[in-house]
Length: 98
Image 1: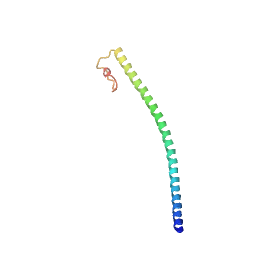
Image 2 (image 1 turned 90 degrees about the vertical axis):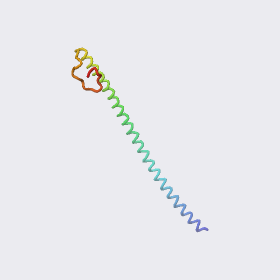
Image 3 (image 1 turned 45 degrees about the horizontal axis):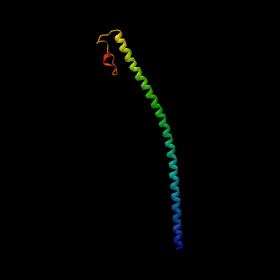
Image 4 (image 1 turned 135 degrees about the vertical axis):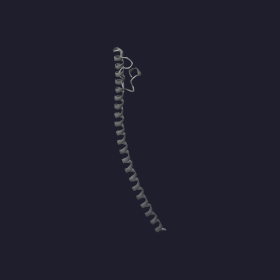
């Protein structure tokens, strides 16, 4: 029975070693995964800030476009252009300008 106990102890010791190796691998991969997640969060924040800037620029362009339409309508009324005046080819322009 003593010999069997030694074999069992050796098998358990080998198993413990393998489990410790696997645990080390898991912890290394977890550390790498956390580092990657931090990088991705930083990138996402940068992209979010960039998207906010693009959105703000688009808002300014939209306001400018509407102001230009208003100016064009004002000029059309001021100069009393007939309905067949040169068309302003802008899909956002009101029908009165076309």
